[in-house]
Amino acid sequence: MSETVLVVDDDPDVARFVEVNLRSAGYDVTVASDGEEAIERALEIRPDLVLLDVMMPKLDGFEVAQRLRRDPRTSSSSIIMLTAKALSADKVLGLSSGADDYIIKPFDPVELLARVKGTLRRAREMRALSPLTGLPGNIRIQEEIRRLVAEDQRFAILYADLDHFKAYNDHYGFVRGDRAIQLLARLSTEVAADVVGPAGFVGHVGGDDFIMIAPADVAEEAAGELCRRFDDCAMLLYDRLDAERGYIEVEDRQGNATRYTILTLSVGVASTARRRFAHYGEAVSVATEMKQVAKREPASSFAVDRRTT
Image (cartoon, rainbow, N blue to C red; front, side, top):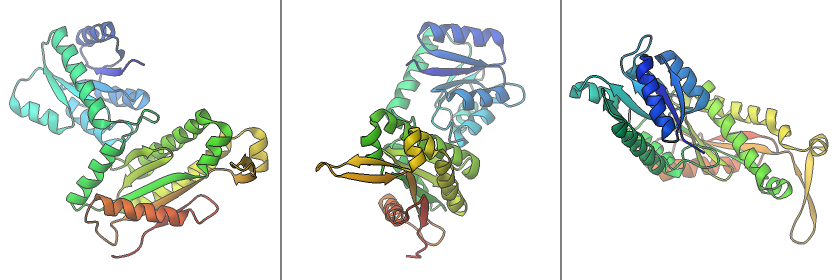
């Protein structure tokens, strides 16, 4: 699958020049002519890279870059700023707004393609996105939690996974199992966007395990909403007969049939609302412990650590 590039420039000649060269190199290109359209298109296509002009009407490139970085749906997109200014202050402003690199106009196709290839290569190496969900993997999850701990910020970790997923996977196969994982990924990013807002972060630990990071004061609302939305969609993962009777039957290695109810979701919440975490491992350990507490309930549920030490 070719990588997707969003080109944002209010000069149609420049936009066309960039588009033609990128398409010739094998990239899937979408064009936007101003800052507001850029944000709309970015949320729609989730580009791998945004080539973003600085000087534009409505919203300038700096503001667009900041908004893309704050939104969990586009935070992992790479950004290259296109600027006619060679002043170091403008470069610093672009990089501090969230850009990964910058190109000074006018530029030639060789430089353009080299910068694009280099930025995308670094992004693949650094973000280590899950190939199944496209969400940040363990490296980025650890970086984000370590940053919050080091900065002594108030935050909460929501550790979510599916109950009886192995039985579902054995019964329906890996393709259907992957669809269930992708559903949870989509719902997690939607809840992060709708409930948590710009401070939200969603990562894919692996398998059916996901991490959401949110401000401490909205963590319980986010956990409850994630459970509710998953329950609303869970039946769609099943064949009609299984959905109607409310369970599937799976044989163990001894040939004994066991009934498993419709998939549910368990979420453990570790929060700094009442305590501080000394390091990344402590925060994740508490969230994991709370997830096991949530699993004691037969329905989708969440459990919050309320200890002070």
